[in-house]
Image (cartoon, rainbow, N blue to C red):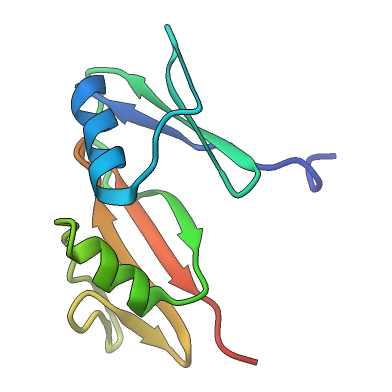
Length: 127
């Protein structure tokens, strides 16, 4: 039933103006639409909403993510704009090195937005 319909993440923000500036400055994203519900962004044919709530930043899990063709290049570019990647230890020897986790060619990295939401970036293995 839902297999052909894109999933649309909802990201909480305690300060919408700060979130708008962060997504613009750090990820070069601007809202495609803005209404009383919040800031609507469109990327890769799907939408995500940044909405105002006092619960922002309370989740300890990954909230959303993108898969990019070159994660190392993405990390270098966004680091130059002030994005800080998390150091993560998942146990069993799986931990990031300089913010990057390599699982047999499947690359992963995480960062937090201005509102404390954890965003995952990934790159599929070559081949």
